[in-house]
Each structure stands twice: as structure tokens, then as C-alpha cells.
Image (cartoon, rainbow, N blue to C red):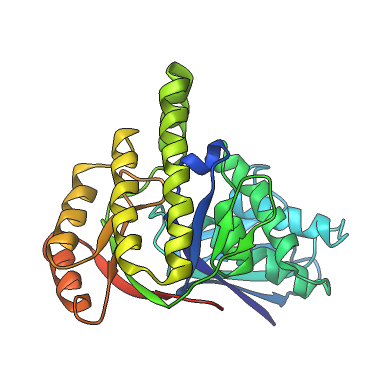
Length: 311
């Protein structure tokens, strides 16, 4: 058996603007994972994927060309030079909520690609996994930034600019985030498309906002490098204002954000595509419990704490 895993991810700063060439900062959420386990099956069995969490059974030979799991696997087999369908039984599991902004799709694809390459006797290098997962993501997010596949494949905090190699960024002192699940789906393809239409209708306004976000992200990089928690929190709040201005926030997310700030979080914002999904809040040892309680009272379906540090 070959078993491979991949982490979830959160975007700290710069979502949406990153699609338009501005920088973003993202980090893995290592305690949330997707897993792919491959075992050899009897001759003639073909390749069958069992996505246990959604109760789906996918036969590679008959799956549609754009089926997300089949597509990721076909890309991995092509990369490994395997032309004939292998006799494999693949079991996929994940504890990352679907459509929550935590990179569930990229994580399951990354685990699958990593396991397939390894089972085929090929190296599953992060750059290879990232490239193949990005190709599969293009089918489902329209114009993905590439940040999900990058963070998840490398599983480390990154400074990301579309089309450039990811950079590891300095974390002057570990800091903790509360991640609150709104319980609402985050329709990434829809929000990315709506922002695209807004940009096409008024490019000057949107480019101006994206440039302001770029300034925020540069400031955040300095604050994270210096361990300046006050500045990190302030910049989270300012980034949230820009996300609200381009229409990707929602009343449910803003309720969670207000609850976190009111309970002592130094800053809070949505993370990912928006309208649903997750909110992140900067906490410390003194405020963590109160913020978690406030988020749950405000409607969060779940709250986890994650620490951002060097890996």
C-alpha cells in the first residue's frame, strides 16, 4: 500500500487581488488533511477510486474527461509515463470541509497525485505535485491564482505572486489564528467570476483596490517578519475592508468577524473566495478561549486553532 497526505490551507492576506498579479500570503493548516491510499488490485480490475466522504465510486475507464478526481489521476499517470490503466484500488478520505476556502479540492488532488506518483515509483516532488494540481484546478475555478496548489504541495507558509516561484517568508515569532467555519459554502468559481466582471466593467477602480491590497500584503510581510502582532491584526482588518468593497464578503462572515473582534481578537477577516467558508482571527493565549466562544455563539459551525510558524 502507498499512502500519501496533503494539508489544508488558509490565505492570510491578498485573496482575489492575487489573481491580478498582486502578492498574497498563505499558510498550510497541517492538522486538517486529505489522504489517498493505493493498493494493487487483481489483474483486469482496472483503476477504481473510492471517495469515502462523499460516497462516490469512480472507475477511471468510464469517468468523464473533466471529472476532478479522474483528471488529477490521469495527469499523474501521464507524468509517470503510464499509458495503460493500472489495476489500482484508491481510497480517498479528507477531514477538510468542502467549499470552505480551506483548499479541500486541491488537497485531495495533491494527496492523489502524490500517492499515484509514489506508487508508480516516481518522485513526488512538490513542484511536480503543484503543477499537476494546478492543471486540474483550472477546470473548476476558471482562472485560479495557483495559490492553493502551491501552499498545499509545499506545505509551508509562502509569499506568492502568480507566475513566479513561491517564496518562503520569514516568521519572526509564531502566531495563532482561530479559523471559524461559517457553515456556508464558499463558491470560489462564482466569486472569482463576479470579481472578473466587476474588473471588466471598471478596471481603473478594481486595479486601484488591488494595488491597495498589494500594499497591505507587503506591510503584512514586514509585520510577520518582525513579529508585530498589532500591525498584523490591523492589516487583517484593512484587508477585510477591501474584500467587502469588491463584494466577496457576506453578512454571515461579517457577523463572525465582529464577534471575534469584540471578544479580543487583534484582527479578523474572511479567508479564501468569500461569501461563505471561513473567517480567520488573530488571537493570543489570553484571548483564544473567549474568541472561540464568541465565534461559536455567533454561528460558527466549528473553530480550530492553528499556529503559523517556520516549518
